[in-house]
Image (tube, rainbow over all chains, first blue to last red; front, side):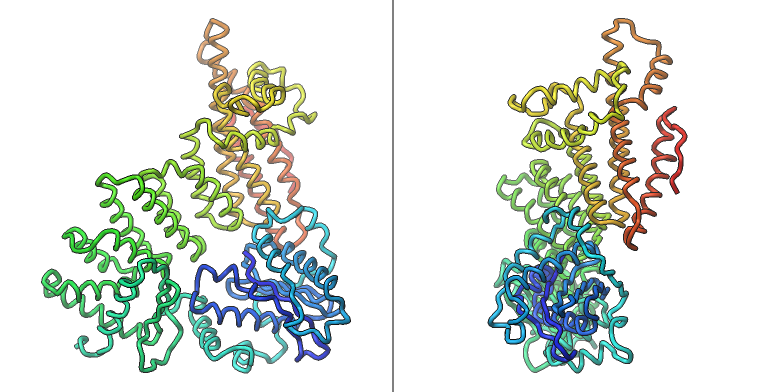
Length: 204
Length: 432
């Protein structure tokens, strides 16, 4: 299952990593079935995690990070355009990374790098992501899978077992969450409870 | 003591009950992470979902539980006001569907005719939406269903019942990975509910999609194995023949390969080979059935097993490192093994009859044993195994685990499967 696909661009300084719009696609798959009331929080949280990880990935590197029941796959290209996919543990890692590469290429084709500095969420629409997410839910049906696996460039995928391993020294996820402006109070409460019960939807 | 400790309890319970009364299509129950109670009702209802704020859960459950226990101890359950009681029971099973006692009280009332069985199905489905692994709720559903199907049903309502059960078990399986209870319940549905046998082929297709998206779920694959056994029992000409034709052409393709030359020398093998392959390639699929399922014995069985063998091969290469898939493969191999044996025995019986003089039993057995290893079907299956295993070299950590699993699989074939085939175990060189 693929849950989310975000496109981002790493800024020149780490603080201004920007989220390109991927209109409402992020959450479509996971939470159409569960966590009705928390859907918004989960969505915010996924955006937050994506942003955090992208900011801490070096240029021209691939990472896959385990976090609870999810895997976050990140690829930051040489020109600092980055893509994040959130999937479950079963989803083949190689396929995720191939998909990111593919989407980033298409994105650049549509919006070449010189318009990035001025682009805002409103000026960019990239609906192909939706189609890809739907198609790649089942890698068997996605096109020419076996070939795709070979095509993946030689950039090594770095594996991390927790999100903490990606953070800079001295940073803690709990602090980042508390400080974050992108998360609403409700989402922060959601995060706390989820942390405590170690699952996202079964409270109480 | 407990009765007045949480005065808002009855109000909250009434709110919950009202949501149930208002919304017949209610689907979900959730507890929301709101830890501080504001001075308003913690019950929220939107888009067929019922939400309860977390702060009241503990107090509410204590209230309900103590009240019910007191009533039970004083044996006043039956004399209590039914309206109050049903409210208490509703809150109790929603908050703790794992408690058998609560379901038992409900059972009592169903037997007395005070609770409607259809409503009971609804309540237990909502309880399962929050705790998809509550086995007591599933057991209770089966108990209620048994009561419902004990009396004859109209066709429409049996279909409705079946659909709803399939929906609930799928919902539970979706929400909790490896939910054995949900799949077990689904198996029960397929073997007990009326009209379930009509759903077999639809279920077969459904489970293919499910397993190819949940490759490490033993329970989902086990359900597929259950379906396979069930389908094999009820085989006949169907719309499946066309799909199976494609599968068989694929599956038998490697037979043209040079490895298999010389097999036709063996009498029995030749017969079977002719039966299947030649018929297949010459005639166009224009007659009533593309695979001549009525003329060729076992062709449907071979086709179905081949279908899954090819499916699991594809999944194994796509998703390296999932033991569940290897286990499923062993199941298919073993079924193919039994099938090959059966086909072979049948053919040798037939050939005895054509010769006119039946062979003495001992001789027949030895012929059977020595020829079995050369049965082309078996040789073909082993060729597939060899191909798969030799392709499992490792590159990434995922694949390293895959090669470990492949090694185990080879051991299993060599030590368990092959040793069952008398005289069919040529000394094998171990790769690792």
